[in-house]
Image (cartoon, rainbow, N blue to C red; front, side, top):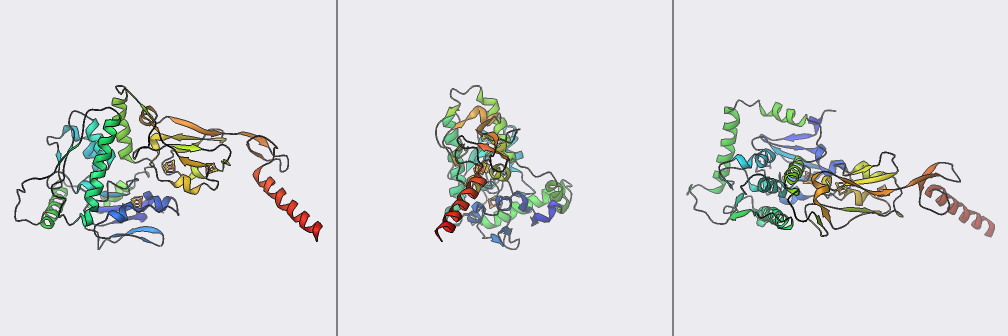
Length: 365
Ligand code: SF4
Ligand code: SF4
Ligand code: SF4
């Protein structure tokens, strides 16, 4: 079945269900986009995320927050914008001139803009209040937390830059309602696409989505590349604190059964088996903190821990979390991950216990 069967499209906006975490793992309950959508256009139908194209107004506000880049808008690519920010004349990013709703950016994008070149972005927040997309202040809160997380991180790694905001601005287009402005922006985008002779949207989005599924979000790849450029000049590269951006994992040697479920379901391959399949590696730079591994582990062997290492993140270095010697089970003669003591595998041990109970029961009858 082609990938396009899982792509829902409006005119400019599209959703690729194969990238959504809920698609990756049946029990995942990510609802970031659902909470953010100002029109309640995103819902879960038969356990799959679904967009109501009638309700969606293509505001792009949900795009930045999706950890797996499941959403796209044809007239604006936040990754491209962030990567080329240093070449842009204007430092200010504003929904009224340069971009759609600033919700199109994630913390990663803001950091890419801040880390590359001399300029740092200045976010125009002066239109959030009263904006129809900012229902109950949710959109503004999200954008502000992206800015805060980016600034906190810059302080943490000792980079003397900060993302500023514009809080009040004279509206040069007085008399025009915000809604009308938004519509105008959309019309302008459509015109631009037509003028540039871009292929019709249908084939354009299919072509885009025909790319192999990105296991690793592009925004994270861009951020890691940006970090590579400055990691050499950092005074400190290891931090023993919790981070909203980078995640760390630990696996209990005693509890893990080496079943491989976590490595199989990790959507970005941050967890992967050692070449002999007798252990598990973790690459911190690839983890998006989705929590699937912890949720799927039947023995609660894997858990999140504080700490991040900039060198490991920037260069995708992996660390081995567990490794087992395989020995032959004295009962079934199959190899199993040995943890010391009697060489009997979990299955045979359980079986022996179950039968000993049955024998005891039979004897007592
Ligand atoms: S934010 Fe992304 S991963 Fe999460 S439910 Fe929405 S589409 Fe899926
Ligand atoms: S950590 Fe859990 S899910 Fe992963 S291999 Fe070990 S037992 Fe299986
Ligand atoms: S390591 Fe766990 S939390 Fe990180 S991306 Fe993989 S499954 Fe998600």
